[in-house]
Image (cartoon, rainbow, N blue to C red):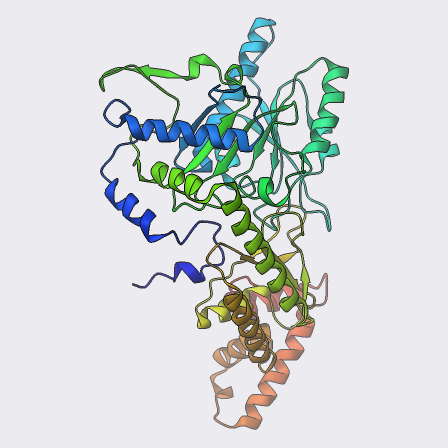
Length: 462
């Protein structure tokens, strides 16, 4: 009861609404174990159909009647672990065959990757080489990424929909540059596309954009069914270009459930309801249905972007080609911060995250609103009005740091406590003076004052 309202949780990419018919399907299949293929053969068939539809959506080179290679997972995190393991094992097998060392694999990514890539690297002992961001360029630079590739690189990961601002990385350019480097060095470095957020967006909104299996070096793609695949959490998918791209030794065969069952997952038991829900959405909506929903999300994102721009207080950091979200940053942080705006929006029920950019761009803090299927034009209009109300409220108050220092001064000197408004104004004036001193660079005095007065009061937001 004390949780936030999922519909107003604008931080999350995860689906928060489905049709009531699908809710019934999910409830009716909660007791089914997805991994028990012999007992629930229809669920297995539905999973295979989903894999085939998604593979063809991503332009996998499949002939008529040919089955795609892929599997349903708990989410994109598990899908990424499986794809990464496949790359690592292929690289190790190749190195062994050549009589070379195979104990120092690495993977090249942008610093803007989701934390699951760091988990993969740490759990499976792969060095993570990340391309640092630049000012006004908040995704991986393909030129720098290819420069970092060496003979121990198992793959380069490109992100189709950055968590930070929704931007798509240039997979086509990355593919072209890698082809040249592979030809020059004799290596065979390949690409994995993390399309957790953008995999169900790009085919419908940007069908001409080349990011998928149309590019020869893209060997695997993961996508989150529980994001723009329009299914409740947790369901993800990982698709391989061909069967040869998934080493056979990673596939296990078990027969104690009644028949020979190939399995390649990190966990064994899993509820079948999300697989069934994904199949429902794919056949219920079809290509045109998904396209219509994504176009509506895109239109609402543009509407919200224009509303935020008109306040004159924010820079827009999200892109037209990307995930339908709005990432925006204050033009002037001298008085208030994005964190204060996020805190005060909660008074209206909105959950809007405030955060800093990835390494090398940590000085940029921003707010992000993810536009999902259930975020209507009316809600967008209301959010803009509530942002304006929060700005008015904050503008009428002293900056947070001055309030914090004022409170600290009164605490240190109880004689300053007084109901007189005039005395309080004097104290605030002293606090403002102290803050000015704090802002002087390279000052030992300012550092001591900061530690004494402000640091314990501000939760580090300043």
